[in-house]
Image (cartoon, rainbow, N blue to C red; front, side, top):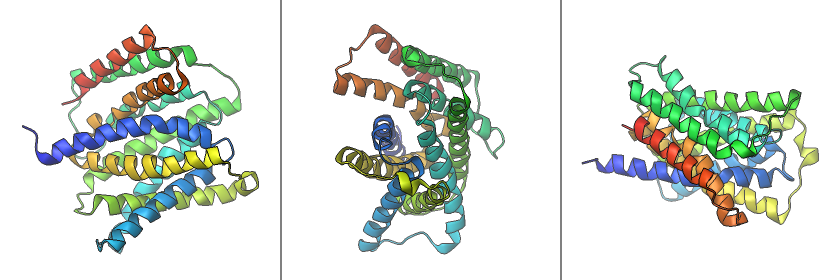
Length: 291
Protein backbone atom coordinates (compact mmCIF):
# COMPACT_ATOMS: atom_id res chain seq x y z
CA UNK A 1 0.00 0.00 0.00
CA UNK A 2 1.54 3.37 -1.00
CA UNK A 3 2.58 5.78 1.74
CA UNK A 4 0.62 9.02 2.23
CA UNK A 5 3.52 11.03 0.78
CA UNK A 6 3.62 8.83 -2.32
CA UNK A 7 -0.14 9.12 -2.78
CA UNK A 8 0.08 12.89 -2.48
CA UNK A 9 2.97 12.88 -4.96
CA UNK A 10 0.86 11.07 -7.55
CA UNK A 11 -1.97 13.54 -6.91
CA UNK A 12 0.52 16.38 -7.49
CA UNK A 13 1.70 14.70 -10.68
CA UNK A 14 -1.89 14.53 -11.95
CA UNK A 15 -2.22 18.26 -11.27
CA UNK A 16 0.91 18.86 -13.35
CA UNK A 17 -0.48 16.80 -16.23
CA UNK A 18 -3.85 18.55 -16.23
CA UNK A 19 -2.71 22.14 -15.63
CA UNK A 20 0.40 22.19 -17.82
CA UNK A 21 -1.61 20.64 -20.62
CA UNK A 22 -3.59 23.90 -20.76
CA UNK A 23 -0.65 26.31 -20.56
CA UNK A 24 0.29 25.88 -24.24
CA UNK A 25 -2.96 27.63 -25.08
CA UNK A 26 -2.38 30.28 -22.41
CA UNK A 27 1.13 31.02 -23.69
CA UNK A 28 -0.08 31.25 -27.28
CA UNK A 29 -2.74 33.79 -26.32
CA UNK A 30 -0.44 35.86 -24.10
CA UNK A 31 2.18 36.10 -26.86
CA UNK A 32 -0.26 38.00 -29.06
CA UNK A 33 0.73 41.28 -27.35
CA UNK A 34 3.32 40.39 -24.68
CA UNK A 35 6.90 39.60 -25.83
CA UNK A 36 8.19 36.17 -24.72
CA UNK A 37 10.85 37.03 -22.14
CA UNK A 38 8.74 39.85 -20.70
CA UNK A 39 5.77 37.53 -20.39
CA UNK A 40 7.91 34.91 -18.65
CA UNK A 41 9.43 37.46 -16.28
CA UNK A 42 6.01 38.87 -15.31
CA UNK A 43 4.60 35.38 -14.88
CA UNK A 44 7.30 33.87 -12.71
CA UNK A 45 8.36 36.88 -10.62
CA UNK A 46 4.73 37.62 -9.76
CA UNK A 47 3.98 33.99 -8.91
CA UNK A 48 7.12 33.63 -6.77
CA UNK A 49 6.49 36.89 -4.93
CA UNK A 50 2.88 35.91 -4.17
CA UNK A 51 3.93 32.52 -2.79
CA UNK A 52 6.64 33.98 -0.55
CA UNK A 53 4.36 36.81 0.65
CA UNK A 54 1.60 34.38 1.62
CA UNK A 55 4.04 32.09 3.42
CA UNK A 56 5.53 35.05 5.26
CA UNK A 57 2.09 36.25 6.36
CA UNK A 58 1.41 32.75 7.69
CA UNK A 59 4.59 32.94 9.72
CA UNK A 60 6.37 30.15 7.85
CA UNK A 61 10.13 30.14 7.44
CA UNK A 62 11.59 31.03 4.09
CA UNK A 63 14.65 29.24 2.63
CA UNK A 64 17.92 30.13 4.40
CA UNK A 65 20.41 32.31 2.53
CA UNK A 66 22.89 29.45 2.23
CA UNK A 67 20.37 27.62 0.01
CA UNK A 68 19.86 30.54 -2.37
CA UNK A 69 22.73 29.61 -4.68
CA UNK A 70 21.28 26.14 -5.28
CA UNK A 71 17.77 27.54 -5.68
CA UNK A 72 19.04 30.12 -8.18
CA UNK A 73 20.62 27.34 -10.25
CA UNK A 74 17.35 25.43 -10.22
CA UNK A 75 15.41 28.56 -11.12
CA UNK A 76 17.64 29.21 -14.11
CA UNK A 77 17.43 25.58 -15.28
CA UNK A 78 13.69 25.11 -14.73
CA UNK A 79 12.33 28.59 -15.44
CA UNK A 80 14.77 30.51 -17.64
CA UNK A 81 15.79 27.55 -19.81
CA UNK A 82 12.99 25.02 -19.28
CA UNK A 83 10.09 27.42 -19.72
CA UNK A 84 11.73 30.38 -21.43
CA UNK A 85 13.02 28.34 -24.35
CA UNK A 86 9.58 26.77 -24.92
CA UNK A 87 7.93 30.20 -24.93
CA UNK A 88 10.56 31.40 -27.39
CA UNK A 89 9.98 28.37 -29.62
CA UNK A 90 6.21 28.92 -29.77
CA UNK A 91 6.85 32.10 -31.74
CA UNK A 92 8.25 30.25 -34.75
CA UNK A 93 7.08 26.62 -34.81
CA UNK A 94 3.58 25.09 -34.82
CA UNK A 95 1.99 24.07 -31.54
CA UNK A 96 1.68 20.44 -32.64
CA UNK A 97 5.36 20.17 -33.46
CA UNK A 98 6.24 21.99 -30.22
CA UNK A 99 4.31 19.34 -28.29
CA UNK A 100 6.18 16.53 -30.02
CA UNK A 101 9.58 18.13 -29.43
CA UNK A 102 8.91 18.93 -25.77
CA UNK A 103 7.72 15.34 -25.32
CA UNK A 104 11.40 14.41 -25.74
CA UNK A 105 12.02 15.54 -22.16
CA UNK A 106 11.71 11.98 -20.71
CA UNK A 107 14.54 10.86 -23.02
CA UNK A 108 16.71 13.75 -21.84
CA UNK A 109 15.86 12.94 -18.22
CA UNK A 110 16.78 9.28 -18.62
CA UNK A 111 20.00 10.29 -20.39
CA UNK A 112 20.97 12.82 -17.73
CA UNK A 113 20.24 10.25 -15.03
CA UNK A 114 22.95 7.99 -16.49
CA UNK A 115 25.57 10.56 -15.40
CA UNK A 116 24.18 11.10 -11.90
CA UNK A 117 25.03 9.22 -8.68
CA UNK A 118 22.62 6.38 -7.89
CA UNK A 119 20.57 6.70 -11.08
CA UNK A 120 17.09 5.22 -11.44
CA UNK A 121 17.33 1.78 -13.11
CA UNK A 122 16.98 1.85 -16.89
CA UNK A 123 15.24 -1.39 -17.79
CA UNK A 124 14.23 -2.70 -21.20
CA UNK A 125 10.60 -2.30 -20.19
CA UNK A 126 11.16 1.38 -19.39
CA UNK A 127 12.94 1.98 -22.72
CA UNK A 128 10.10 0.31 -24.64
CA UNK A 129 7.57 2.36 -22.67
CA UNK A 130 9.32 5.61 -23.54
CA UNK A 131 9.38 4.71 -27.23
CA UNK A 132 5.71 3.68 -27.26
CA UNK A 133 4.69 6.87 -25.44
CA UNK A 134 6.57 9.06 -27.89
CA UNK A 135 4.98 7.20 -30.81
CA UNK A 136 1.59 8.01 -29.32
CA UNK A 137 2.42 11.72 -29.21
CA UNK A 138 3.52 11.69 -32.85
CA UNK A 139 0.27 9.95 -33.83
CA UNK A 140 -1.70 12.50 -31.81
CA UNK A 141 -0.38 15.62 -33.53
CA UNK A 142 0.71 14.24 -36.90
CA UNK A 143 -1.99 16.03 -38.94
CA UNK A 144 -0.89 19.37 -37.43
CA UNK A 145 2.80 19.01 -38.16
CA UNK A 146 4.15 21.62 -40.52
CA UNK A 147 7.68 20.90 -41.62
CA UNK A 148 8.82 24.47 -42.10
CA UNK A 149 12.22 25.68 -43.21
CA UNK A 150 14.50 28.60 -42.57
CA UNK A 151 16.61 29.94 -39.76
CA UNK A 152 13.74 30.88 -37.44
CA UNK A 153 12.26 27.40 -37.69
CA UNK A 154 15.59 25.74 -36.86
CA UNK A 155 16.09 28.11 -33.91
CA UNK A 156 12.65 27.15 -32.61
CA UNK A 157 13.44 23.44 -32.83
CA UNK A 158 16.78 23.90 -31.06
CA UNK A 159 15.07 26.01 -28.39
CA UNK A 160 12.72 23.16 -27.46
CA UNK A 161 15.66 20.82 -26.93
CA UNK A 162 17.50 23.42 -24.85
CA UNK A 163 14.35 23.55 -22.73
CA UNK A 164 14.27 19.76 -22.40
CA UNK A 165 17.94 19.60 -21.39
CA UNK A 166 17.57 22.37 -18.81
CA UNK A 167 14.49 20.69 -17.36
CA UNK A 168 16.19 17.30 -17.23
CA UNK A 169 19.32 18.58 -15.44
CA UNK A 170 17.23 20.63 -13.05
CA UNK A 171 14.99 17.66 -12.21
CA UNK A 172 17.90 15.32 -11.45
CA UNK A 173 19.68 17.97 -9.37
CA UNK A 174 16.49 18.83 -7.48
CA UNK A 175 15.92 15.22 -6.45
CA UNK A 176 19.45 14.88 -5.09
CA UNK A 177 19.67 18.06 -3.05
CA UNK A 178 18.28 16.27 0.01
CA UNK A 179 17.15 19.52 1.64
CA UNK A 180 14.36 19.40 4.19
CA UNK A 181 12.60 22.62 3.29
CA UNK A 182 9.17 24.01 2.59
CA UNK A 183 8.38 22.91 -0.96
CA UNK A 184 6.32 26.03 -1.70
CA UNK A 185 9.00 28.35 -0.34
CA UNK A 186 11.70 26.63 -2.41
CA UNK A 187 9.49 26.79 -5.51
CA UNK A 188 8.80 30.48 -4.91
CA UNK A 189 12.50 31.29 -4.70
CA UNK A 190 13.20 29.33 -7.88
CA UNK A 191 10.45 31.26 -9.67
CA UNK A 192 11.91 34.61 -8.66
CA UNK A 193 15.47 33.70 -9.65
CA UNK A 194 14.33 32.28 -12.99
CA UNK A 195 12.03 35.24 -13.59
CA UNK A 196 14.81 37.72 -12.90
CA UNK A 197 16.97 35.92 -15.45
CA UNK A 198 14.17 36.26 -18.01
CA UNK A 199 13.73 39.93 -17.09
CA UNK A 200 17.41 40.52 -17.86
CA UNK A 201 16.93 38.81 -21.24
CA UNK A 202 13.87 40.97 -21.93
CA UNK A 203 15.90 44.13 -21.26
CA UNK A 204 18.78 42.95 -23.45
CA UNK A 205 16.37 42.12 -26.30
CA UNK A 206 14.64 45.52 -26.01
CA UNK A 207 11.20 43.96 -25.59
CA UNK A 208 9.66 46.96 -23.75
CA UNK A 209 8.93 48.71 -27.05
CA UNK A 210 6.70 45.82 -28.16
CA UNK A 211 4.83 45.37 -24.88
CA UNK A 212 1.08 45.98 -24.69
CA UNK A 213 -1.86 44.46 -22.84
CA UNK A 214 -5.40 43.56 -23.84
CA UNK A 215 -8.11 42.01 -21.66
CA UNK A 216 -7.55 38.68 -23.41
CA UNK A 217 -3.75 38.57 -23.09
CA UNK A 218 -3.93 39.90 -19.52
CA UNK A 219 -6.37 37.12 -18.64
CA UNK A 220 -4.07 34.53 -20.21
CA UNK A 221 -1.11 35.89 -18.22
CA UNK A 222 -3.14 35.79 -14.99
CA UNK A 223 -4.07 32.16 -15.71
CA UNK A 224 -0.43 31.25 -16.29
CA UNK A 225 0.59 32.94 -13.02
CA UNK A 226 -2.06 31.37 -10.78
CA UNK A 227 -2.53 27.94 -12.29
CA UNK A 228 0.51 27.28 -14.48
CA UNK A 229 3.12 28.67 -12.06
CA UNK A 230 1.78 28.68 -8.49
CA UNK A 231 -0.25 25.50 -8.88
CA UNK A 232 1.58 23.50 -11.53
CA UNK A 233 5.21 24.23 -10.68
CA UNK A 234 4.70 23.74 -6.94
CA UNK A 235 3.04 20.40 -7.63
CA UNK A 236 5.92 19.40 -9.92
CA UNK A 237 8.56 20.18 -7.27
CA UNK A 238 6.63 18.11 -4.72
CA UNK A 239 6.23 15.16 -7.08
CA UNK A 240 9.97 15.17 -7.83
CA UNK A 241 10.78 14.67 -4.15
CA UNK A 242 8.76 11.47 -3.87
CA UNK A 243 8.65 9.79 -7.29
CA UNK A 244 11.27 8.49 -9.78
CA UNK A 245 12.40 11.01 -12.38
CA UNK A 246 11.27 8.73 -15.24
CA UNK A 247 7.77 8.56 -13.77
CA UNK A 248 7.45 12.30 -13.18
CA UNK A 249 8.75 13.05 -16.68
CA UNK A 250 5.72 11.34 -18.21
CA UNK A 251 3.80 14.58 -17.76
CA UNK A 252 5.40 15.55 -21.09
CA UNK A 253 3.45 12.74 -22.77
CA UNK A 254 0.15 13.58 -21.08
CA UNK A 255 0.25 17.35 -21.70
CA UNK A 256 -0.31 17.15 -25.50
CA UNK A 257 -3.23 14.75 -24.94
CA UNK A 258 -4.81 17.25 -22.56
CA UNK A 259 -4.15 20.05 -25.05
CA UNK A 260 -6.00 18.21 -27.83
CA UNK A 261 -8.88 17.31 -25.51
CA UNK A 262 -9.08 20.98 -24.52
CA UNK A 263 -9.32 21.92 -28.18
CA UNK A 264 -12.16 19.42 -28.57
CA UNK A 265 -14.04 20.85 -25.58
CA UNK A 266 -13.42 24.56 -26.20
CA UNK A 267 -13.28 24.70 -29.99
CA UNK A 268 -15.81 21.87 -30.61
CA UNK A 269 -13.24 19.93 -32.63
CA UNK A 270 -14.37 16.33 -33.30
CA UNK A 271 -12.98 13.59 -31.07
CA UNK A 272 -11.56 11.49 -33.88
CA UNK A 273 -10.63 7.80 -33.77
CA UNK A 274 -7.02 8.92 -34.27
CA UNK A 275 -7.17 10.90 -31.03
CA UNK A 276 -8.61 7.98 -29.09
CA UNK A 277 -5.98 5.60 -30.48
CA UNK A 278 -3.14 8.03 -29.77
CA UNK A 279 -4.30 8.55 -26.18
CA UNK A 280 -4.44 4.78 -25.69
CA UNK A 281 -0.89 4.37 -27.05
CA UNK A 282 0.37 7.08 -24.68
CA UNK A 283 -1.29 5.36 -21.71
CA UNK A 284 0.32 2.03 -22.64
CA UNK A 285 3.73 3.69 -22.75
CA UNK A 286 3.11 5.32 -19.35
CA UNK A 287 2.13 1.98 -17.82
CA UNK A 288 5.38 0.39 -19.00
CA UNK A 289 7.60 3.21 -17.73
CA UNK A 290 5.88 3.61 -14.36
CA UNK A 291 7.28 1.49 -11.57
